[in-house]
Length: 127
Image (cartoon, rainbow, N blue to C red; front, side):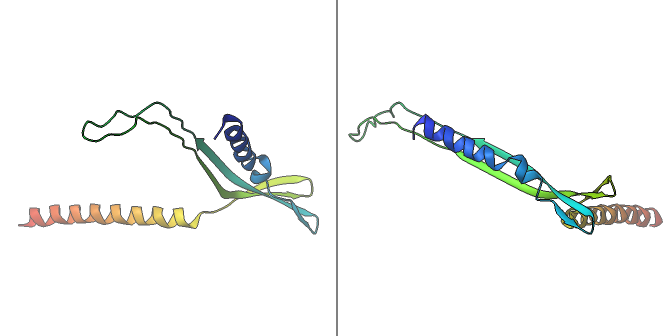
């Protein structure tokens, strides 16, 4: 893969993380405008290579060497919505129910471990 092709692909990947991905199309109804917003993250990587591999002592082989590599990731999550009504702008964040549930489970596990420790200490003092 030559460098111009790699640069073209990198530019196309960067265009995927553009502002149009962050702000959605506004929705208007009854004088209220809703502007959806997302959190977009992108990342990439590359690679290369050349040279020759060391020749094996036990078998005849021709020295060789090559390489390549690439990677790209894009993540988009809803962040919330801007509400435009009567000349005022308000922000309503998107609620991630999964994070709330996981947070509640972590708190419950910690509470149970603390309760167990307190109960053990109390039982040892009684005996």
